[in-house]
Length: 158
Image (tube, rainbow, N blue to C red; front, side, top):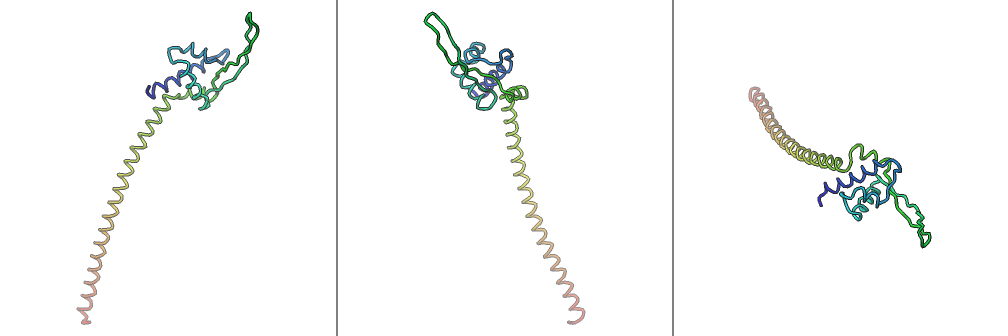
């Protein structure tokens, strides 16, 4: 399974949780039932755990009492709800859009690094040429100074 499909599934579950109004919480079986075409229950659990670890969803364990002809028994059911950060994240970007942005920024950084390396090389070459030109100019002016002194001493007989 490719990365984009997983990111789309994360976004789909987060959007589903964001759209739940009354009550705003859902159990894994309810989510699985409503998103049956999206994923199976074991993968859904992994997705929900990822959303929780990212801080975009949270869970609440509730005790549910069941009564049948054999008697009464309790069961713990975990309910999931979107957090404020999750709402904000899905409304502003989501996993797919964030991944595209990261990929774009990474490619842009790579381009900037290559451009910086080229500029650094050009500046280094320019510095070498300036140093060579400075040496040549220095030699030229030393020769000119020598000529002036030679001419001065030659004309004055020193």
